Amino acid sequence: MKKLIVSMLVTLMLYTAITGCIQQTDVPPEMSAQQEEQMQTPTIAPTPTSEVTPKPLSEWERECIKRDEERTKLGETYGFPIIPRDAESYEDLIALLGKPDKEITTKDPKTPAYEEIDLFYSKYNRVFQVGIWHEYKRSAIFDTTYKYIIIDKLALGMTEKQVKKILGNPTSKSEVDQGEELFSQYWDYDNLDMRIIFWSDSKSMKNAEVGHFGVGKKYKGKTSCGIGIGSTREEVISKYCFGIYCADEIYGDSILIGDEGAGIDFRFEDEKLVNIWIGTRDDFG
Image 1 (cartoon, rainbow, N blue to C red):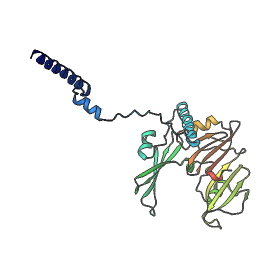
Image 2: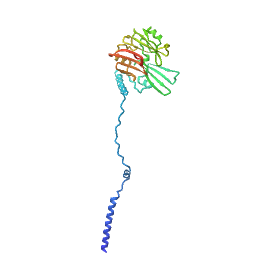
Image 3: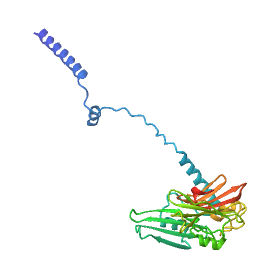
Image 4: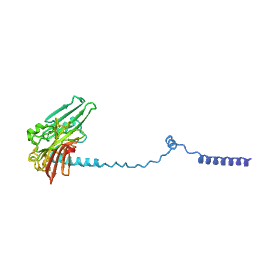
């Protein structure tokens, strides 16, 4: 009987040991809720980050940056403000240059939604125009200094009669030339080394006006700011504050200001002024 009891006890002990091993091997230990969530969520390998390569600047953008740097240096040298490219409103102009000496507002009855305001700054010898499109709530700044430049009392917009009263009869006149929209005719004054070009909407040159004019090396007069043939590049810059507006161009043998294809072109040889053209850029000679 004892042997039977001992045998049963040994069998029970062996069974207990075996089942304990099975439980320890097959059943994992209890996990926290965070551990269970981490096991259920698939692991995603991190994506390697790559630096975004900036888009290269165009030739025009590089040129604009270069010109802006040049204008900034000029402003610092001569003590005049720089009008940035994003300036476009009347308020922007006043904030940069202060109150003008004079304002002229022009409204065309045919286009009531648009108006122009010319602002005169004698301190800088410049005239700026703010064009306002009320319908679109937009505006833009233009340089209109060229419209008011006077040489020998001559200015853009004068009639043939007014020019003759100031300068007399020309040395010669060209044939009337027909352009895409207007007719034109050259008047040359050899004694002044001056050429005047009239525009008209008719071949007879009726109601013709001075569209542009220029003077050459032999010209003895001066502009209303005291600039004349022989003036240095520095004198021109200091008088007309080149660099004050983003439309100004200072390069090579020429300094030009203006907008929309019209302006003042000062041309140099050996750093001395030899030619001044005022009017439409395309016709600068």
